[in-house]
Amino acid sequence: SYVLTQPPSVSVAPGKTARITCGGNTIGSRGVHWYQQKPGQAPVLVISDDSDRPSGIPERFSGSKSGNTATLTISRVEAGDEADYYCQIWDSSTGLFYVFGSGTKVTVL
Amino acid sequence: QVQLVQSGTEMKKPGASVRISCTTSGDTFNNYYIHWVRQAPGQGLEWMGLIKPTSGDTSYAPGVQGGVTMTSDTATTTVYLQLSSLSFGDTAVYYCAREASSLGVFDIWGRGTMVTVSS
Image: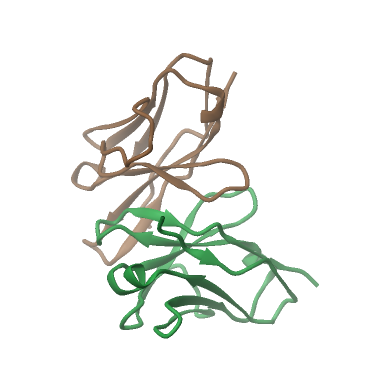
């Protein structure tokens, strides 16, 4: 099965920058999406198609991709950004499937 | 504001079945795929499958066992996830989510339905 690899955890001080990576064999040819999930809540889309920010998501959230690694960057981190973050792709080349990364816990120090 | 409204918490015994609902707006029901995503306690997100509500066409994840069935009801613009022959491992929060214009991204999520399987 297809695997998207994320670091289990990232710690960052308030006001600093957090970077979360997502690696996979065919990420380079697929749009990567990112979701934020706070405890007890449903996931929320924060970045779509590598770098598009949905309406209502702060500009502090940005996405990029290089080769087979996508990165979610959170600038000027706030306490309210503490959450789990998941990357996700859609791949129809070998069947219709949607894959999530294993998730990264962002802790604000 | 677009919403997906899910049914409430369920507690079932092993071997039982459960049906979870996700009620959508008419526009969402007619124009978007609805997906189901599972999250076991303390674990990550797992895609289970999708349904095209107007036709009832479905596609299930390779790892989803035969005890999963997705259906839709046009009269109530509601989609359903039925889990049969429940086991302890089915204990999870089940989310419905809308796929944005077939772009492979989930733009709207329901609040989730907790299913607990316990003897």
